[in-house]
Length: 136
Image (cartoon, rainbow, N blue to C red; front, side, top):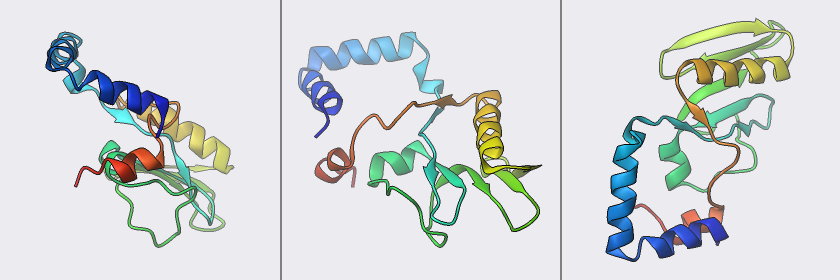
C-alpha cells in the first residue's frame, strides 16, 4: 500500500478531520475540479488517458491491449500511414494528424489543459490500494 494513500486514509478515520477536509474542499471550489490521470500506453502504440472513475475503481495495467474496453477522456492513436490523432471522447472531437506519436501526446496534454483538466503527474495510489480498498 502506498504511503500517501495510507496517510490520507488514516486522516479520514477522525470525523473532525473529515469535517475540515470537506470545508476546505468546498472553500477551494474543488468540486468543479477535473482531474486527469496520466496516460497509459497501448501495446500497439499510442496512449489512453483513463478517467478518474476508472483509475479509482480498477488496477491500471502497464499497457492497454487494443481491444481493451477503456473509460477514457483522450486517446492518442494512429489509423495507419495517416499520422497520429488525438480523439477527445468527452466532446467526440478529433485533432490531427500529427507526424509523431510524441507530438500527438503533447497535443493531447495541451488540449486537456485548454479543456480545463488538471493533469496528474502520476497515479496518487498504487494497484494494491485499489485492490485492497475496492469501491465496489
